[in-house]
Image 1: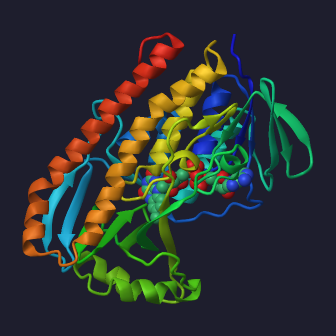
Image 2 (image 1 turned 30 degrees about the vertical axis):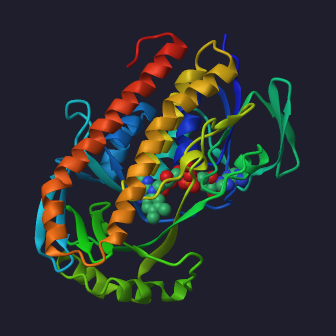
Length: 400
Ligand SMILES: Cc1cc2nc3c(=O)[nH]c(=O)nc-3n(C[C@H](O)[C@H](O)[C@H](O)COP(=O)(O)OP(=O)(O)OC[C@H]3O[C@@H](n4cnc5c(N)ncnc54)[C@H](O)[C@@H]3O)c2cc1C
C-alpha cells in the first residue's frame, strides 16, 4: 500500500505542473497551488533538448509540444564568430532511436498552456494567488496553513516554487541563490522565413544566440559578465542590450539593430542553487529550480525539473516508506542535476574568460565542439541510466 496519497504541490511552473500531472496520472490525490494571481512568464522562449522532450513524452505532452514549438530535427547548431564567419556545425543527439527529436524551441507561454491543459485531463488546475504561510510536521503528515487562512494536512509537500523557494526556507534548509557573475539579455523578434537554425556566436567575453521558437517568432540571447547587484531600469533594457552586443555582425546584426523602445527585452542576472543532498526534510521534498537551479548555458534547467517530477511520481507509486522514497529520489536525481549544473557553469565561465576570442580560440573550438557535446550527452545518458537503476531497485521492477 502507498504510504503517501494526499500531496500538495507548491508552484505551478514547469516542475510543479509536471509533478501534478505525473502524480495525478498515477492516481494520487493532488492539489497544486501557485503564488501568482495572473500568469506572467519570465522569458519568451525556451530550448528543450531530446532528454527533456523524452520526459515531456512521459508527461503525455510531447505531440502538443512539438506541434506548438519550432523543431530542429537534425539537432544542428551553427556556430559563428562575432563577425559572422562560420566556425563549425555541431549536432545534438535525438533520443529513442530518432523517435524523440534533438532540439525544440518553444514559447514559454505555449509550453505552460500545454502543461496546464494536461492538468485538466485529471480534473486539476492550479489554484492561483495561493501560497503557504506555515509548514508544520505532525507525525506522518504535514500541516499547511495556506495564504487564505485555511489549514490542511498532507502526506507530502512537493516544493516546486523555484530558485527563491519559500518552502525550502520554511522547511529549514539554509540555502541561498548564488550569483554566477553573468547576465543574460534576451529579446523576441519576428522570424525571417529563412532563419531556421539554432545559432551561437562566439564573441570576445560574450556569446550571442538565436533560436526560432515558433513559425513566426525567434528569440535572441546574449551573455556577458555583469557586476553583482547591477540593476538596469527596464525602460533602458533594449538600448542597453543593443550597446552591449553591438560588435556582433552576421546573423545577429539585424536583430541587434532592430532593438528599440518597443522591443520585448528581458535582463536576468544568473543565479544558481547548489544544494547538497538530501533534497527533503521530513515530508517536504524539493524539485526543479528549488533544489538545483542551474545557469542556462546548457538549456537543461527545464528538462531537469520535468525529470524530477517523473521520477518522484514513479518512486511514490510503490509501497516503500516515504523516507526510503525521498532518499532514493535524491540519490537518483542528485548526480544528474549536479552534472548538468557543473557543465553549464563551466561553459558560462569559459565564454566569459575568452576576452579576446582569438583565431586560436576559434580553432580550438572548431576541433572540440562536437566532441564536447557528445561527451556531455553520453555522460548525461549514463547518469540517467544509473538514476533509473536506483528507481528500479527501490520500486522493485526492471528499469525502463
Ligand atoms: C536566462 C535563462 C534562460 C533559460 N533557458 C532555459 C532553456 O532554454 N531551457 C531550459 O530547459 N531551461 C532554461 N532555463 C532554466 C529554466 O527556466 C528553469 O530551470 C525552469 O523554469 C525551472 O522551473 P521550475 O518550475 O522549477 O521553477 P519556476 O519556473 O521558477 O516556477 C516556480 C513557480 O512557483 C511559483 N511560486 C514561487 N513561490 C511560490 C510560493 N511561495 N507559493 C506558490 N507558488 C510559488 C512561481 O510563481 C512559479 O510559477 C533558463 C533560465 C534562465 C535564467
